[in-house]
Amino acid sequence: MFSGPLYVNGVYSLPVSHNLIGTQGASLEGIEAVISHPQALAQCEKYIKAHGWKTIEAPSTAGAAQTVSANGDPTLAAIGSVESAEINSLDILAYDINESKDNTTKFAVFSRSYIPEIPLKKSAEFIMMFTVNDEAGALVKALSVIGKHGFNMKALRSRPVREKAWQYYFYTEIEGDDGSDQAKAMIAELTAQCETIRIIGHFNESGACDDN
Image (cartoon, rainbow, N blue to C red):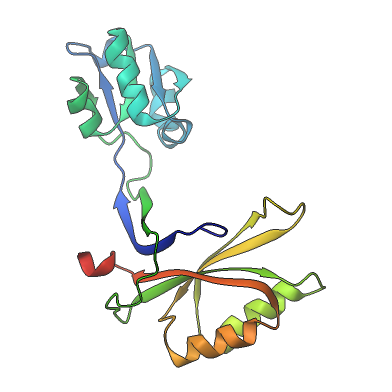
């Protein structure tokens, strides 16, 4: 998003439910090992440890389900979705085994162009990425400008700039409309503190592109 041509035109937060899935006819009592993506294994760690199962890492939860289906081993189970079980003709041995029941994953809708005409609500947000000047206190000054103009940041993350060693860009999700006069004034003032500023897109907090 920082260096390429992509824009975010919507964001969805979808609930994630991890299920224990095995070969047809397999039983919970017969499972000896569990395979899945490392994050899924971590989110189900308490359940796995309670049963004393070995863990095997896979590139994805979908790939783990495919492995179980291909092996046909009733002692090997995967952690994945209901859809993965259906696609791979597997049985669900246990539902919702993740420790946190509020587990969600955020998905973004990308396009190759910025869409300014998305109808925004009061709960609208926009994504801004920037790099600061190489001087003491530059990041603090940039963040103070955002707050000064009345904008609340819901997220702030740093990532390394690939082309430049020891330099970082900052990703932030900000509540409000990037097309408002306040936002334009904020961006104009930020140009003095930032080497690069890029608005990646805007969206409504509840979903994407007015659900179209």
